[in-house]
Length: 119
Length: 290
Figure (cartoon, each protein chain N blue to C red):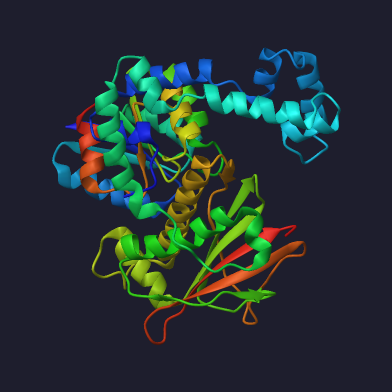
C-alpha cells in the first residue's frame, strides 16, 4: 500500500482525497498539510511515496513547496491537484519543477486513482 | 470535468508522457519569442531598450508594446509588424509535440478533435452584461457562464439565471465566499448563499448524503472550494485568450444585517441565481476602476 500525503488549505478537498484514497485499497493517506511549509515538515516526518498538492494556498504555495521538495527528497513523487491545472503556464511550470502530473479541479475519483497508479 | 490545457488532456488520457509534453514545452519556449525578444531579433530595438521599457512599466500600467511606441522606440506600424511576426512563427503545443516526435500529424489531428469535443462543454454562452464590463467581455461572460455550468456539474441543483443588477451593496445572506483576481484585471468574485444552498454545496463537494452534523467550518470550506473551482477554471479559460490572471486563496465573509457594501473604487454587478423556494444564491463581480 502506497503512502500519500495530501496538501491543501481546503479541509473539504482533503476529506474528498482521503476518502478516494482509503476506498481504493491501494493507497493510504498519511496526513494532511495545509500549506507548503507544513508539507515539507510532514514529508520529512511521514516519508510518503506520493504527495498530492494544491497550488494556490496561503503561506507557502504549492509551486514554491514543490521546488524545495524535489531537492530535499529525490524519491517522493508529487502530483499537483489544482483548480489552475488548465492554465498552460502553471502546468508547464509544475512539470519543469518536477511534478509528475497535474490534475484539475473538479476531479473525479477515477482520474485521481488512474494518475496515482500510473506513477 | 474541467477547463484543460491540451498537453494536460493528452497526459491524462495516456496519449503522451509528461516527459514528452515537457520536451514540447521547452521547444515552444525556445521558438516562441516574446514581443520584446522578437523586436530585438528583427533589429528594431536593442536589449537595453527593453530594459528601459520594463523599468518604465513599474510606474505605468501599460503593455510593453504600447509602451515601446510611447517611448518612441517603435512606430505603431513596426509594433504591428512585430506582432504579426510573433503570430506567424508561434508554434502551439500540438505542433511542438509533433516536432519532438511524440505524436504523428495524423494523431495530432485526431486528438485535437477529441480535445475540442471534450472542452466544447466549456465554451461560454452569451450572457447579458452591463456595458462597463465590455472591456474584458469574454472574461466576464466566461465567469458568469462557468459559474452556471459548475452549479450544474458540481452541485447538481436546478436553477434559473436572473437578470443582472448594478448594486452598491450585496444583500445580507447566510454566507459569502469570495476570491480576488489580479493581473490583467483587478476584481473580486463573490458567491452569496443561503444556509440551504451552502448545505447543498457541502453535500456535493463532500459526496455525503447528510451534512447536518458537519461543523460550520466544513460547510464554509466547501463553499470556498466551489468558488476556488469556478475561479480557477475562469483563469484557465482566460489564459487561452492570452489574459494573465492570478487568484488569491478564497475567503469567507459574514455579512452584516444590512449587507456587504461595495468597497470604494470598485463597481459591482450582481447576478441572481434563482433556486428552490426559500433559498437564495447570488454571484457578484466587483471590478476595480471600472
